Length: 373
Image (cartoon, rainbow, N blue to C red; front, side, top):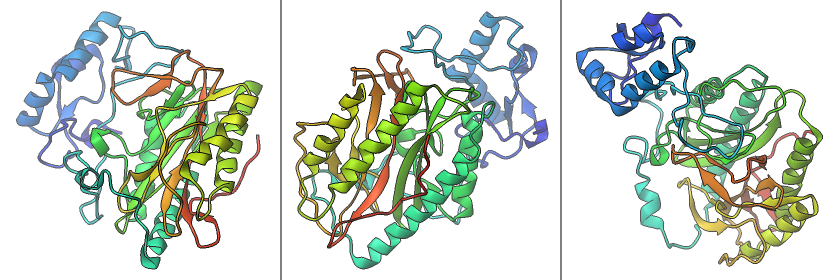
């Protein structure tokens, strides 16, 4: 990408972040690439921000060897494992105006979800169920496209670009984008990251594992799924973790039918995890999904939970167990307020499907072709 093709880097650009040529002189001097703005207002606002000045400080302290302009934004944070974020993040990706978007797209606040808090799970009409089938099929297509790009050397930001473009091509909005101010179109969680990893400039390495969590908003409804993939050749422990996590999800799906208790899903998941030397994350759960990204029911993945609710035909929800290697299920968060990692730096994997309870059982709306490790 030439300098003339780089979009304005201002987070509050009023011109739609057009291709820009006005470069920050301090960034140019330090060898930081990509700091371009479309005009003086964006230039002044961008260069005056604390985040932008932090870039200057960090690169200056790292010395002239850091020619790429990439940096760790949290140099004083004690990370639990070997993974480090690699900034700067790319500019917010734009969604064409003609694509319908959820209510949080502009200000980050899911107002409809807030209004529905405490309400029982919705029972979808046949027409709404068909819309869920459509959006979930599209979400599966996008995840499979993203997965086809996984290889050593690609950055998670490049995968974000693939997901974003695939959503737009399907006349869909990438649901994570600006949801509670999440900055990207997909979650990419590497190695010890449990969930909500932010795509950045780190290149995937041989032996990594990567979870890609895709959600689309199409025709007023959301479809949500994720899978964990090997990057090149991975060790046997990581293979076992991925197989165990998939087995946990499959066992829970088999229980789903009208009259089944939501709290019983954890009884199927946790024994499998423990038998394979793993633990089940408790902080994050599955969730209802329909015209809202997250809603009732709440779906814990561990045994002896106190989830309320009985499955009924017409309910849609996700099951998405997060399984950690070893005995620790707890998590810690990076200072970005999103990235959740294991407390001991051991690896974590996750699989997720969106499900529809039918009159006779369950339909896996996001089902894909199975693969073996």
